[in-house]
Amino acid sequence: MSERLRLGINVDHVATLRNARGGAHPDPVRAAKIAKAAGADSIVCHLREDRRHIRDADLPRLLSDGGLPVNLEMAATPEMHAIALAHAPFAVCLVPERRQEVTTEGGLDVIAQRSHLADYVGPLTRAGCRVSLFIDPEPRQLEAAKALGAPAVELHTGAYCEAPPGPRRSAELARLERAAKRASELGVECHAGHGLTYETVGAVACILEIVELNIGHYLVGEAVFVGFEASIRRMRALMDAARAAPDRGSNGGR
Image (cartoon, rainbow, N blue to C red; front, side, top):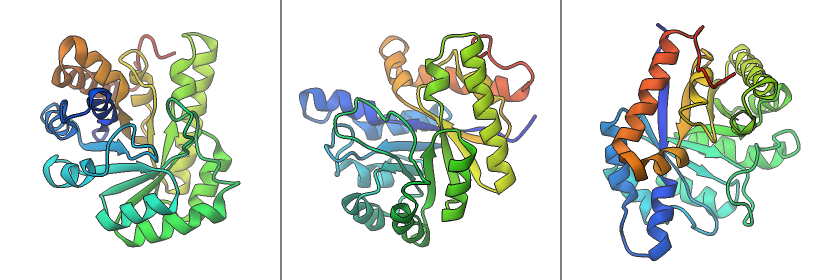
């Protein structure tokens, strides 16, 4: 069996539910503690410009009380840069962000934004943060991330997850496999996430070059029916089973 695949749990949509009515419930810090008990390795949160998910006050609480390393997703803006440098979380993932989008719609264009992103990757790395870039599974984007000095990338799995089972999904899975292999060749740590479900996680977990999956919205939705801890435990079990037998994958993954 290969090295254990790490699981990052995104608590953004716990905060989204709280924000729907204001107040303090449900608390994303409580969610982080439950995630730890269920087998998570880190907590992911996206501090957006419009604060639709976590709020500024949530970040220091997650860092001090959540019980797990925090991976802060953020746009490459001066405001977010200052916040990240002030708090120096374990990890920072730079992501594209548009105010009008419902969720992150694609990866960063590292090639086009290379000079802009360089102003963030270096200072955040020197502050002790593990910096990753959220990108589409394209070799040229990986190579640009490597040139910037980013130690890690997160492959956008949305196109794979949204494709129906069959040839299109198989093609998207092959893109992820090629990108993960290229990341390994470049010496860049490879993560993946966005839209992963119980049905789709197995095939991605079988890609041995991927060392971390970050999952959130789907598990918060499942928690409505089975509870947050149970939803995470099932995802953890599916990941571990797929990793133990990487030739098997997921019945719905291909």
